[in-house]
Length: 287
Ligand code: NAP
Image (tube, rainbow, N blue to C red; front, side, top):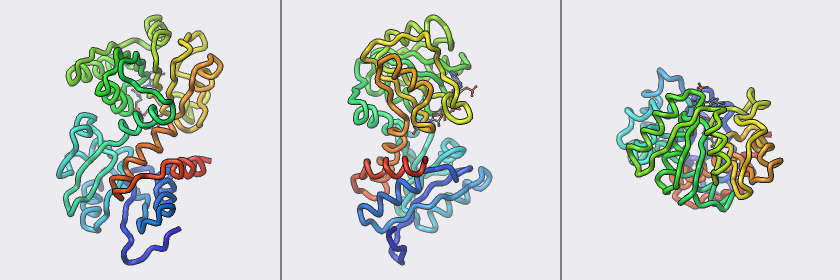
């Protein structure tokens, strides 16, 4: 690893808990590879200490930090500026310290779209999509899908009202009218049968729900459908296994994780991110 000295630039991640994060390994390996005198540290921050921690980022001259659970939304009122996309998403996962001004970005949605393009060769424009879940990740994903002009969108959260609220939100900002479907309903399975892209944005499939699948075996897909699971631990979820047995393309959320990190890396360093190196480091850290 690069030797830390008086010129080392500081970056990191604030959240709670933070031990599970693979971002330190992804970023430090990339700094090392590009011979950049940067360092990335995990910083546990309790919700009640968030404001003081941000002041610390400013005063200690950090170049920037990633922001993760539970601060992605709470951080916004403490920033000097927030990009349009982060404001629309209602969440910030990167804060840059621009000469003492803290600016909030969201790289989750762009990371998802980059991953779809690069990992699946999939362009969302004009496509029919179904998104399972209507929480924070679903919001980031549906905003990008709407911005990139999908043809139709169905949202299905276990809490039907939450699905409806996200549909209304998308409809109020884009010329797209998504519709909400109850989970396990015939309508949902019909929509999946007709869709080009199915996205799982629920925690179903992720440890401790790693033995569960958000849809059942009766599902039918068109042969060219892509199944994207935002869950990346395990890498091959029950849903991705099901997609494989049905003969359609499964894509793991590791791609989104790496690419949101790659966009953040470029914000921190103004260099192009070594995506393959970052992915390798993330996979190693997950093992
Ligand atoms: P969240 O805010 O908790 O939202 C998840 C939503 O899914 C909740 O509304 C939840 O309802 C709902 N849900 C649970 N079981 C469901 C089911 N069987 N069918 C439909 N909806 C269901 O979580 P999040 O932050 O959006 O994250 C969702 C997943 O994405 C997590 O596994 C996270 O690790 C992953 N993620 C991955 C990346 C990446 O880079 N790959 C980035 C962000 C998030 P209840 O709250 O009522 O259970």
